[in-house]
Length: 391
Image (cartoon, rainbow, N blue to C red; front, side, top):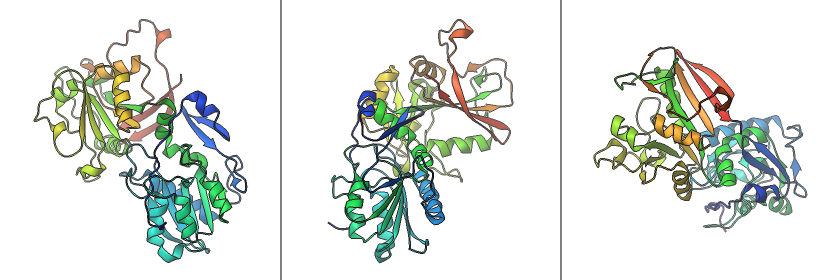
């Protein structure tokens, strides 16, 4: 076994009842289950802070979390993971992150950069190193072979097949510290964890609206309701999802490309783009922008939100960015399949035009769909609201 071999752990899924029987302490955060395992010889700081981890290790963990969040990181079935290698003096000598199925895990990426400097070093990683033989060998073996002295990780691996890394490292004589900045690290993979538990992708519905709830004017124009700061934020958040979903009506009316662009307005390379998904029974013109070669596209021949999510989950999609029109949004909301809402609200009034969401069949205020307000941020002249389901 060589330290530069690549291992990709295949996800193992389970329902809520099965999750409740997993070993360790089960923590539920925004619908996603995070499992922390007390392994012999492994110090778990999940509920006790990070008093044992050094300041350098804590700083390295924060950097590893930044790496895990990097756009172009994992898209699809695998979680986002970042890694930093520290010398015994606490100096960072290498960094790595996982870029998706078929690519090196974060630890392997960092070990390749570190080379011989990994011997005697501390590896700080956001997820418990995998102890699983997939396409090659486990990351635990690569760490031991590289002569790593200490491993500090944040969140335990939710995949039962890949878990057990901490105990294996301890058995090999590696000092292991668990649970450092666990909550912050778990938040990076919140959607992935939700998908593993619920067997469907996490759905974020995004829309832009005027202060009076209009997504377009009476003549159908909608460019642009919000300013450049809000539109730039949309692309940053799109990049953290693995699928952009719209209905055929949006494709016919607006002919969008549905790509992620960088700060300069240039599309990211096709390999870093989320999957573009179009659902509906109406045909899509072969010259539609969404069918160009800027990104992969899948056509879902269904109007049923549950069926669409089932098909996307089968394609290893874990986080859907819903950008359809009001009819599609209403279908997902009415079905209880909107997990997060991100609304960009402009200080403007139209008085008429397209509503942000179509008729939900709600006749009384007591039946309103209620969400928990998580964040309010000003972006230029606009306001971004982030809401989560409360049921």
